[in-house]
Image 1 (tube, rainbow, N blue to C red):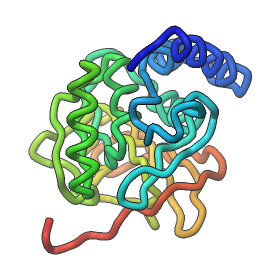
Image 2: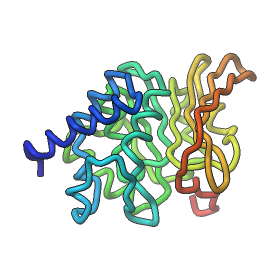
Image 3: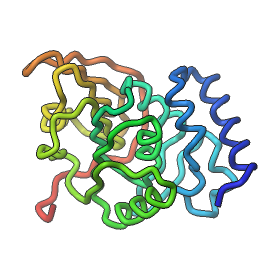
Image 4: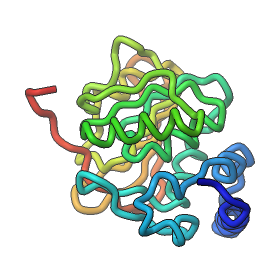
Length: 214
């Protein structure tokens, strides 16, 4: 399940992420802690600590480690903060956030991914505070407000229902665009005002549109 080989490869991945500009020690320590190979199909295990994305179930992907690290860095996360994650996927990003000390509330609309990620996060003892199957566009208003929000799929436009669930002073990290996305952060200044910053081009699977069954 876990070996010295895996740990050595994780250390090399952390060094690569540092070379690519990731400086947040909390992020790097979490990447070094979380066994990414367990979140992949075993056929990809030998490549789990390369900076590559891989397919997972339901036509989804596990993001490049750099993307996970970069989004996590943009959150400016502090231990104990309440984080809403939209798109649990395999659970790898969730595990990184939990390893950073966040209180994570995560939502996924692919039922088989909910089941897989829940089992894996329990197995490695990096469970979120709350995990559910549901519509990411709606967020989790019953648990709001959140200190931070992270979206791990490409939204065609700003999901206003989500950013409204931020605390004043909270930060949302969201890739926005149709075919290709740009990474944005939104700092909630007051009840109505948000400060937007752009952080370059990325490629994500689409954030699935709302459905009546959820």
